[in-house]
Amino acid sequence: MSRDFIISIRTTVTLWLLTAFLYPLLIFLIGQGLFPFQANGSLITNDQGQVIGSELIGQSFSSDRYFWGRPSAINYSEGEAASPTGISGASNLAPGNPQLLERIEAEAKRLRSAGVEPVADLLYSSGSGLDPHISIAAAEAQIDRVAKVRGVSATQLRSLIAQATDHRFLGIFGEPGVNVLRLNLALDRVTQQNEL
Image (cartoon, rainbow, N blue to C red; front, side):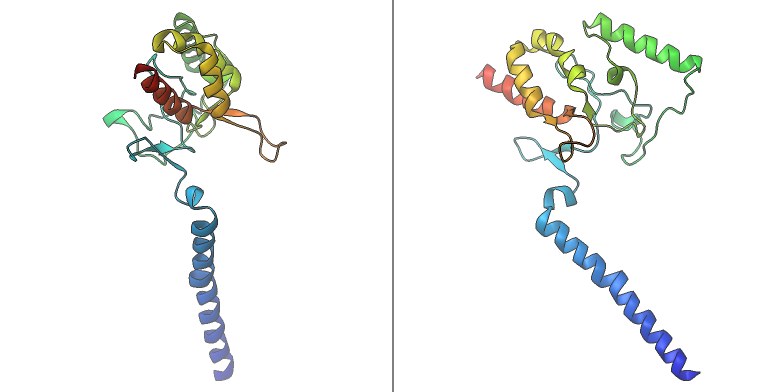
């Protein structure tokens, strides 16, 4: 019986060393060595080196000077009333719920008043509520509005949209999407260059 007890202790210690120490250390070293950008949160910095967000989490832009992203059912990035980042979720309203219909109609009215054709991803939030992407069609629907406010040509904006577009994974999975944070950061750079 004591022999079985010693074997069980050795097995427990060995498995603990493998699963609680060596495996996490190996994954950490692989992540930091081969994929440091992704392993550290895909953080985006501005020209001054300050972190302004992550490629993986959408930010709310309401100014006419910027491209707008998908609406969110949660308030995760707007001022002091924001919930801490990491909380995500959809509205949980059923398709027949009058509150959802009112929100969609109000958003469509706001978009039309700004001269933007309401496309699906500018009206509906994503399942997580944190989606950083909009469709190419949603970005192109905003070109006239942003060009007018910024004084940038539509051709320049189309070029920026193309640069901020993430294509299908492995060329077959998912749909192309425009990362709104990267697009707006590039837009700020172009506007600053034009002003010089």
